[in-house]
Figure 1: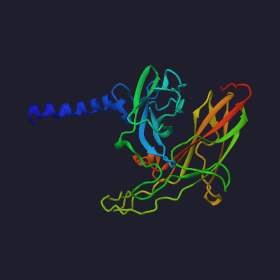
Figure 2 (figure 1 turned 30 degrees about the vertical axis):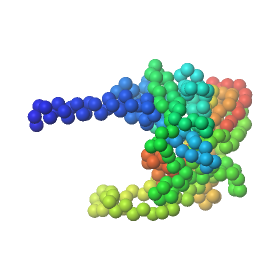
Figure 3 (figure 1 turned 60 degrees about the vertical axis):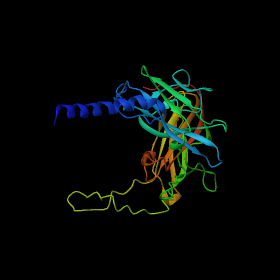
Figure 4 (figure 1 turned 45 degrees about the vertical axis):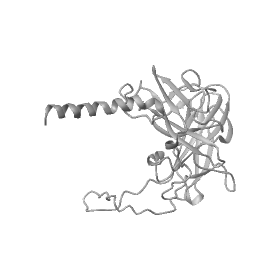
Amino acid sequence: MSRSLITIVAAIVVAGPLAQARQQGRGQTPVPYPLSNPIRERGSSVTGAFEGWYYDRDGSANLLVGYFNRNTKQEIDIPVGPNNRIEPGDADRGQPTHFLTSRQWGVFTIRLPKDFGAKELTWTLTTNGQTNSITLHTRPDWILAPFADPANKNTPPVLRFAAAPSPTFSGPPSGVVATYTTTVGTPLPLTVWATDDGPKINIDDTTRPARPRAGTGTAPPNPPPPLAVAWSLFRGPGAVTFDDAKPAIDKANGGRTATTATFVAPGDYVLRLQANDSTGDGGGGFQCCWTNAYVRVAVTGPTTTVY
C-alpha cells in the first residue's frame, strides 16, 4: 500500500469520530464514544438524545426525547435549573431529574404550540463538570411514527393502572396517568396490567440469514424478547427502592403485574413505567413500539436514614 493511500485511510478513521462529536449538539442521538465524554463507571457525563418528533392522536406536534448516561454504575440526580434546563422559555418542560445509567429511549415529550414552525429548543445538562447540549426541532426528516410500525403494523404495549374496564395508555408518555399517596418507609403497592397484540403482518425477510445454534447447521433466528415492564424513578427528592423493578407479567390474569415502592424521604415523586414488546429497548432503533407512562406519588413523614 502506498504512503499516500495510508495517509488517506488514517485521515478517514480519525475524521469520522471527530465529525460525529461536532454534530452532537444539532439534535443528533449522542454517539457512545465522543472523544471528550468517555464511558466509565463514574465521573462521566449525561447527554440528551433527540429521538424525533411526531403527531399525537389529537393532531398536536410533540418532541420525543431520551438521554444517554455514560456512567455505567452512577445514577445521577440533576434538579431542573442551570444544570438541567430547556431553552428558550420555561426551563422545566417535564424532563427527568433522575438519570438511570446507559441509554434511555423516549422518556419524555414536549407538546409544541401550533406556531412553533422552524423554531428550536435546546436541552442542556451539566454533570460531573461536563456540559452537553442538544437541539430539538421539527425538521421533516426527523418525523416518527411511534403508535404503529408502518411495515408490520406493530403497535406499542397497552397499560392499565386498574382492572378492566379502565383507561388504557400506550406509546410515548403524555402527562401523569395515576396518582398515589404513601408514607416514608411504607411499601406502596403498584399493580398494573400490561398486554400487547404484536405485529399484525408477518414479514418474511428471506435476505436475512438465520443464526445457527451451536453444534447444528442452520436454525430459525433467536426468538424475540417477551413483553416486559420496568419501573424507575423519574423525579423526586430521595431514593426509591422497588421490591421488583421488573415484575413478572401474569398472562393468565390479564397481564397483571405487581410490585411495591418504598421511599426514604417525603415529597412529590414521579415514577416511570416502561413496557417493551418484542422489539426491545428503543424499538430496535425504529422508535416503535414501546410505552412509557408516569405516575405521581405524594410521600409524607420524616426522612429515614439509609445505611
